[in-house]
Amino acid sequence: GEDVEQSLFLSVREGDSSVINCTYTDSSSTYLYWYKQEPGAGLQLLTYIFSNMDMKQDQRLTVLLNKKDKHLSLRIADTQTGDSAIYFCAERRGYSTLTFGKGTMLLVSP
Amino acid sequence: DAGITQSPRHKVTETGTPVTLRCHQTENHRYMYWYRQDPGHGLRLIHYSYGVKDTDKGEVSDGYSVSRSKTEDFLLTLESATSSQTSVYFCAISSAVATNEKLFFGSGTQLSVL
Image 1: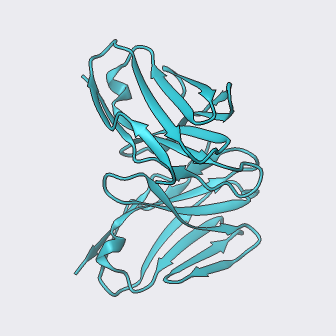
Image 2: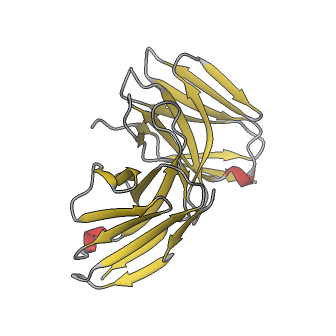
């Protein structure tokens, strides 16, 4: 199938905001997800958004969804060194399983 | 990791040998999945199961087989390992597919095929 696209790398300074972008493929995708992977660990669900929503906020995390452009973004406010990880965007296409992007490595420097 | 145990955590094997990876869950979730993670490819689905003895192929199933004889266990077998199967393998579980599917992942198995 077509790929879910993400930029591969993002570097920010501690205290700044981080924005990780994702372009998905299926306009009928029902749910879109953000997962976080810390070194040596499995993926951990961060947040998700239903396709009839434009925005979802959860503490320092803000998810924006532009269905017209099939664009999803994750904003992390006040980024901390503990936020350094790989972030995966994933879409659910109809009743199929999740399709993941290749991941964006976020590096937060002090 | 949401009651998911993968074993072994690390394995080194030789080309041509059979290898079985095990995923054990204590959540009684219906759906279980095997993914592989490779640089430049992200996560790719190998096989998944939607119940005991019910399995289906993912996008990269060639060279792999699975079995699920009990709700809690999902086995991934490489019948004859090849160097291209060197990867990190993740098991995931989910309680629902039809609506909001949230996957919970194990810690992964690092497999090296020499």
